[in-house]
Image (cartoon, rainbow, N blue to C red):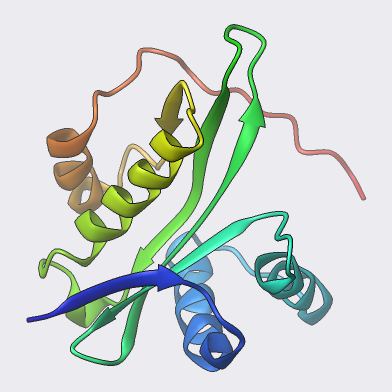
Length: 149
């Protein structure tokens, strides 16, 4: 099996959208058309606000990753936040997620980031088995306030 990870391109829109909606469904979330289009534009503009990668497995796009760089108050460097990572259910276990994480890590190192981090649900046991192999679990607890629109 041949995995290729590359920056997202305009030609990936249909594959990306399918994977992105599957990702949202997995997290029991949804979005509207304008928010999806806004994200797509942020990923594909010449100077993207959010970086996007796709992973191809023997040709078809089967995985996506979205990440961005954040200014840090603790270091002189940026941090890299891997916000979204999703691999098609039928292609899981083939190294696609590992390849996506490795590419994000390489890009973060090239940007001289101090750290690469991401979050997931405690109940996401399948993904956490991989994450435990490639990263250290933090002892930080995340709190959030959902702001009304």
